[in-house]
Image (tube, rainbow, N blue to C red; front, side, top):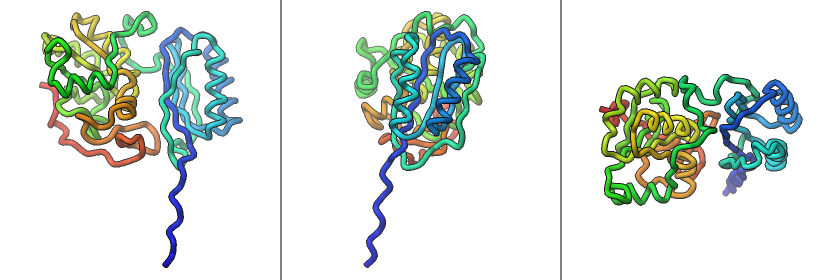
Length: 264
């Protein structure tokens, strides 16, 4: 009887993190980071903008640690705290360092997360709210998915509000049209890792919606700390793994009917 080969040991470290902070000399940052990542044979994407940095990188642990050391050497980025997962294979095909107008496009320049973020709710507390069917003060909780429609269809929280977005820049007009629908509710915005909610929650506050939170660390942090409680399917990620399960390993998402949880 032939013994099957041992399963591949995950050796690639995948990280994602962002920070809204004023950055200058973007071409200089771009050149330095591109050269270092190439030398370390890292792959992924780093986005740079006047409002901050957003990165997705994958490679061996020593290489990941080296680029994080470089970033944290700048006092403005000293508190970068990436979310991590492991994979057996490199999930990116190339390395890109790009300069953008925004690290996540909302097209509402008055919304500046660097000036102050909306309140955040920890994954464990959100689970307690969902278990109870209300927040700590007895108000109904509305979960608002700020991701694109195809991401939602691969998995999301049960009963979430879904604007069927084609891209995040469509979020602002959608929520502006439906702001009155959230009266009397505690709203929790969520996305993959938290970056979209940094702007989404602030915009909702700007529209006069009183009780708005963002899910701290997004779906991936919820998976890490809580698992799949109240969540159905997987979470789309923008690399070759495509969908992660609640164990943060590649897995199939559960395709939901596109209009099943559509916002009304």
